[in-house]
Amino acid sequence: MGRALIIGAGGVASVVVHKCCQNSEVFEEICIASRTKSKCDALKAKLDGGKTKITTAQVDADNVEELIALINDYKPDIVMNIALPYQDLTIMEACLATKTHYLDTANYEPPETAKFEYSWQWAYRKRFEEAGITAILGCGFDPGVTGVFSAYAAKHYFDEIHYIDILDANAGDHGYPFATNFNPEINIREVTAKGSYIENGEWVETEPMEIKRVYNFPEIGEKDMYLLHHEELESLALNINGIKRIRFFMTFSEKYLTHLKVLENVGMTSIEPIMYEGKEIIPLQFLKAVLPDPASLGPRTKGKTNIGCIYQGIKDGKPVEYYVYNVCDHQECYKEVGSQAISYTTGVPAMIGAMLLMKGEWKKPGVYNVEEFNPDPFMKALNEWGLPWKETFSPELVD
Image (cartoon, rainbow, N blue to C red):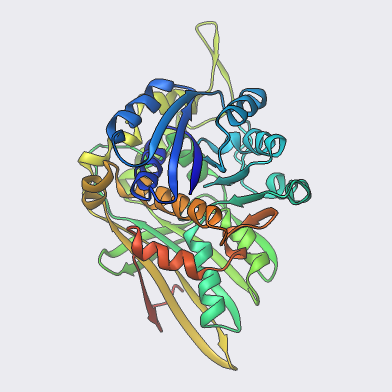
């Protein structure tokens, strides 16, 4: 059907490449591009010989002119941005210059401050619309599938959704004293930032890890979870009818939090530059360099993830409570694509979103969050491509 340019060569990109190759009827050709071409070549070597034609390229995703040159040379139907969120805007600029469709898995954040909001990318709406191309924002799991779950719930089960709680639980064990399941720099910036949620149309800010709840997750059991700020709160509050409150919770072990607090106390999680032996360094970037690479955790990680959403609202004037979630097994993911479940749950939705755009089902000029599209083909594809979902009514609620 077409060709995709995949920018990035880390753990999530590896899953995206594997799943695109499994879906060769849609992804007839792919190009894997990254600043480090050897990583792209290593991915190509794993999957060469199948029906999907794979090429590789070197590109600096911070450099708009390099991106434009690569896109013009390869002429993809879509650019899949699986790089860092710092690079969303440069890649979007290159897509505008070449009139190429765009997809990413996380919203833009400036490197110099831990600020997570969609304003920078939403500012591109008119330009993408005038160019006649589509940009799909946040097409991972959270954000991503959580938005599709919300659109599906709103379409089929509610007239109004009043309350949403997004619950992200990882019960996997990688055996290290301390490691992060995705990019350490992004992960630690997110966790150490102030928490927030939306209530009655207003942002309510909390201290990091201030609000804790215990929840009994299906197939995982009781876990401690903490309220964080998360980007999909902003878009869902605008796009889902009737919202009174929306929150995001993620599970963390006491061991993880203890290590993180010590690192924070000694300044290792700071993004403020310091001088070391005559050279300027950023402590968090140095910490990232000494921590285990998340892409290496696959063979070590055992256990499951459970990510889902609990909804409360009304249908035909009557109250409805609904829970939809996915459970993913780390070892099963590793057997299939060589990655742990955190990368898998982000990479599979990215492939599905690109597939729906290339098939014309999620294709309209402008910049969109996933909940603004028809959720039904995406929900069907989740079951077909490795992330089956389950639903229950009247679930255990979060207080």
